[in-house]
Length: 410
Ligand code: UDP
Image (cartoon, rainbow, N blue to C red; front, top):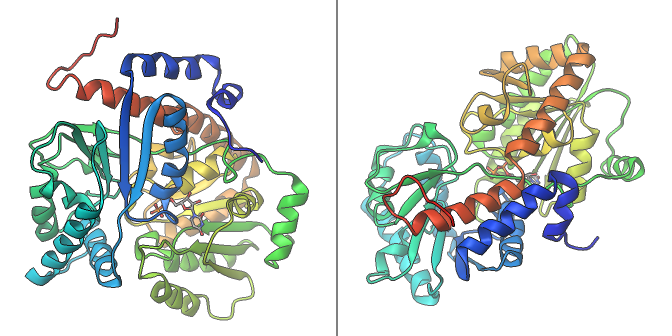
């Protein structure tokens, strides 16, 4: 399938929405952006950048994407920082911060930062700005993680660099820390025309389930997420085992490995142990996900779970809602922005809560269907890539008018 162009989105969101993007782009004029993150594959940030970058280029905003490099020691540290910022208690020695800065400095020396706007994603490259002493362009830090309970030591360290930026972007007001710089709120977004989300034929969906030997004799409950403690895959197994005492169903756990994530194997071992030899639990670990296969797993599911205990946003929730699936999500981070409890899905606070909702939705197909339909509409209104493009264009305009609360366009 060819790569979708902006004009293709008219059929999904309407001609006015696409027209508005071109109007805003004409106000922005000729500009350039550089996106910087730490992995080209795996996880939500890479997922979005793969689509946002070409579409911004199509709008006339010259956009590039660079990925920073690092050894295993660097990614162990940045994963530990990530966990700490999401609330894990841990004390770090001075050496750790020095190593983090040394890798950032090495990357800084190897990269160029000539674009009008530099968008640095997440903590891994956050201190690159330290070496950019005199700058004519704007730098923005885009934080995708759940910062509702940050570890103070790591946050105090990073904040020194974050406050050098022109602005910071968070996915929820719940995460917005006290900062001396302006803050904006961006929801992440999914691409309805990407292979991950586009329509599939029933035959293709069947072939994927056959390939992975997943029988369709019972309802399928699925969680698709990296094997990461915050996604709580062990809690998913507990919830499933409790629910299955009352309703017959299968559990499908699918996860891949982000290039910058050293933790997956360890968590996978815990998951396998929790699952035991239960024939109704299928655990799939992918080195590289094929987007249409993930799409097929989501479409084949009777219920999609995202039982996170901390969560920046969870694109997986929007992906499933877009496919009219009833979704049960942890009431944390960016998930409640997508799931309005009882209307676009169900929010839970525990494995017991998740198990009750699995039972309830498998027994009430009308309710499950309604949640999926409402969820689809919510994603259409708020969480599609066209909305994210609009936010980037508005960001460029807002940064031209620092300190002003209203920007008038002629
Ligand atoms: N994903 C995937 N294969 C997997 C697990 C996840 O393709 O085995 C995708 C998922 O469909 C979503 C992204 O990776 O598009 C994960 O983004 P999310 O915001 O849910 O979580 P993150 O991994 O960024 O914490």
